[in-house]
Length: 415
Image (cartoon, rainbow, N blue to C red; front, top):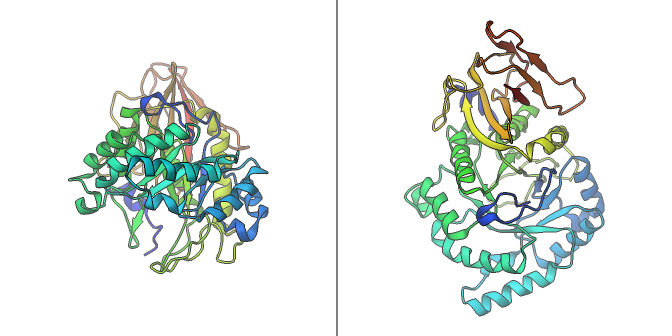
């Protein structure tokens, strides 16, 4: 079975610092951050690789566990193109605990990168267990004091990790302890939409937990969009990438990381192509990502000002998620595979609707509360935005809207 044959089953079963913890200031305005994770080897490809990433709508570059020299080369290139870089330095893995020695180590890392305007932030750890959180919190406090303009990212374990892997009794405790001890600037986590070729039934449950933590603690969160087949799995279709990206937006994500942009070397997995093939040429998935990124940047000025208020699924809701209820602006959707994220901005109301079915498009009928007077789509491309008015309060308020497979659309609700 395809690794990306995922969300039909999920549907039927079921930095940029803004508003962050302790009121730290946000680094972005209306530009939605989109990361090329495991970006190309720019020490070999040079400026062309960054130009290509910009053409596809990426705003940030990251490649985990790089050597200092390689990081400095890519920063030099990125400086000339106003392209952000998230530095992941091998030295982060061996930072000492003793305060004086730790200070000197962080000063050394900072000195190597400080004068580069393209330095956006740092990725300092990947999937740490909870027993490291206290140490990481001390490190992050020092790093933030030295680098207040550079956000710090830590990629967290997924909800299906075992208590032994988490270092906590459960996932809620793991996330709570991370926030309490590390005081993160961004919540960023790993969760595959499919495991061993089968749909991951906890994909949306993980997003629920992260979103709630984000809202409760005023910390923005980022989501990975998985592009990378490995072993016997097939390459993703356009709808596979769409449904991941638009589901994240409906949940209120404030950043996306396409993982992976290029195919990393591995002695464990037989990686095939990411958005680039093994030679470094753009694949069809690169073109899919470019189209999605273009739409996200069109929506960005609106998305970045919205506050997530609630998320619901058409029945049956996936495990750990909530089904639509009668007190919402949209009370019912005739379809089993729809996700609705509700937002507000001042007194304005919005909804992001996603067709989770990555195989088939749909034209569901949506039923609205009597309060709703009109809905208007926020334009994301050159197509005419959808608008529908309900002038008669005594008639049933419903309409049909077309969604491609895996598609998502943002609407303003007028009451």
